[in-house]
Image (cartoon, rainbow, N blue to C red; front, top):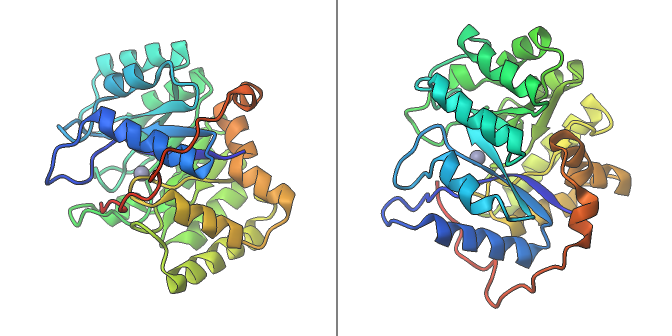
Length: 289
Ligand SMILES: [Zn+2]
């Protein structure tokens, strides 16, 4: 089984408008072509013609058995009514987690204004995902996206489940320590490349992920995620195949950890029939962020 905890329905080809339905179709095709059983779609911290609001994504995805939504929240602009809307989606089970974007927005994860968001996540027992590490946009501010700041949130909220997205890349050692020390912190290794890994970069990253498992131990904290359409699913699956780990560890990373963390019903997923991959699916040119 494969669960991808990190995908988007945003259109990153911002020179041409692409509808949410086109993006959704491309996601379904790529999942089918790569045998991905379930994916979480993360919404943005901002709404633009290329970045649909959570309500639109929920409306498209709510009856889709292989997709769930993680609601992006803008630290700068969230209002009480936004949290009420998210609370309703959490109640219905359509939203499986929350996402914050430090670095893209200038705030530290331990800012007191975030506590109401963490309280909401704990009330519904869903994880909060954090963007960490490199910001693709040069306007991002890196001091806010350093994974070390997650430690404060983890310590002050021992019952909050946290995901460090992108393993803090390039501050992967800091991420290692934060997941090692805090049992409530997980990490996804999505978005390490734009498009496909080159051989050299793949080797470099494989070494880092191996080092992480060696340091932090049994990878009960590590989650498979791609950041599709920024990174290609094909390239990520090859990346994981190349990782020298036991079958049990592979299962944890590919789906077991995610199923527990996001409470995904894998028994129900196993019963679904798999759509046949359509011709040409998965061969799309990789998107650039
Ligand atoms: Zn992402």
